[in-house]
Image 1 (tube, rainbow, N blue to C red):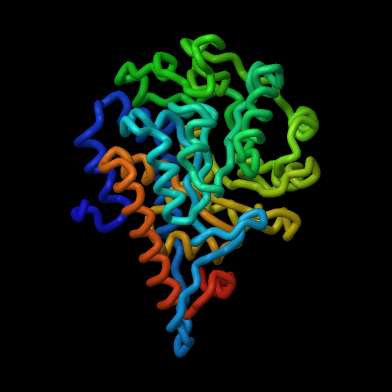
Image 2: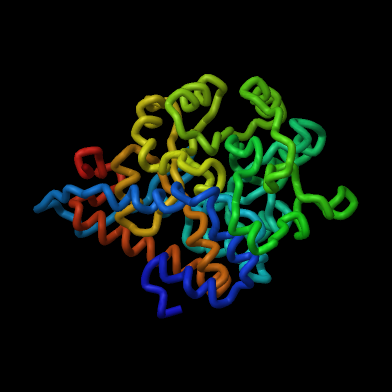
Length: 351
């Protein structure tokens, strides 16, 4: 693990340890993967404006997310099937997140059940929710289970009306539907994947803005809408009671040539206008990427693929190292920017 000095280093380690099919499932984007490449490139186009002669002898990376204190403005994004990377699956990832003091978001499409993940996780945990049977009994059951298991918020993914066209998976013949889904035990048809648009042939979702009232009526947990890429939808999210808006193009796995998340972040922050928190994922690989997103108005960033690569490289230890490296990079960036606290990072620090 000493070979890994930054988040990108974990990808090569993961490739060496994983089968080609599962690796392609994690790594691939939609279509020609323009958006996949652009997610990282968009950060590289930004430049930082450091300020000098500021007392940075004490760096504080902590923030609050929906009122809960986290050690740094970085969280673990919901990603499916962690057992493709390591036998311990989401339990290992959740333990590493708890050790680091960051938010962990469990996926509906996890290898382990949400209850098993909760037992391994710390108190900082959210549940990512795909509607099942277009807001039917399976959907309601998931919401009730998440609340009973102590999750602190519901993260409703809104950008999966149907799966994106992911040719890496198709070329490898990888079938996500053949795997075990921990939230859907055999008595409930575990041989079938959840209704989350993971396969291109799935029927499009009928879930609309009007159906958000159904979700809100069945849980008292704060509702976060993940997959927002326009100011118009950000305003609609607020109108429909979202506590936070999560800017995301689903790791570039849905609509190719949709914008890089960080390129639309400012537009969405302006539309939200302080009425809710704003998070972003997609392309974050460095501490300076985190600082850039914060300067553009994000409350926190979330990591997807880098966590999976680290998990494949060395399980819980790998994820812990990845989060530790990012923490060190962020602290270094904040000191060099002249921003001892996260709140000190402003729009003036990036061009």
